[in-house]
Length: 179
Image 1 (cartoon, rainbow, N blue to C red):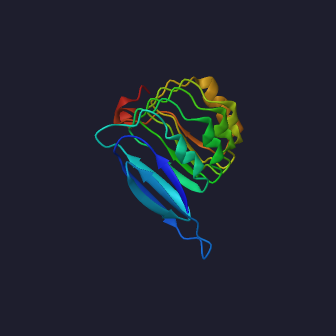
Image 2 (spheres, one colour):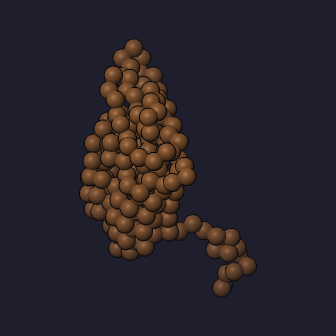
Image 3 (cartoon, one colour):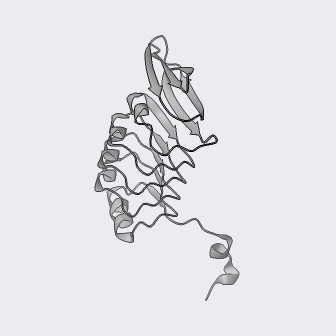
């Protein structure tokens, strides 16, 4: 059994494991003196408690069979380069944080299918994101990313749906049409 210790503030952590037949790998996560056992492929949800995370917990990058990361509504300003270790990650959901940039190692996440970075402070996207050929949804609405970067990633990932702006009722209301 491997033990992973995440020091920090009290939060609610949910791990969901999927059984992988008879060859289950068991790990345990210790967070604020509470141990949570997980097995198989993992989904990680860290919900904000009374205090928000102010840094990405680098220790989770050691859980190489992690499939899903949900770090929603924290104050995380960056993603560590160690994120590239998570080769089986399919969903990275980090809306409403304080992300200012993405590491180039994000391009190592070749199984990534959904990347939600809405409501952050991003101004550009790394070219390496184009290596994520399985990416189908990239949500970057409510950031300050220039059209140049959006067009570049769209050219590199033609099968990816890039969400830049959420349409409001006034955007879709035909009564607001000028023609």
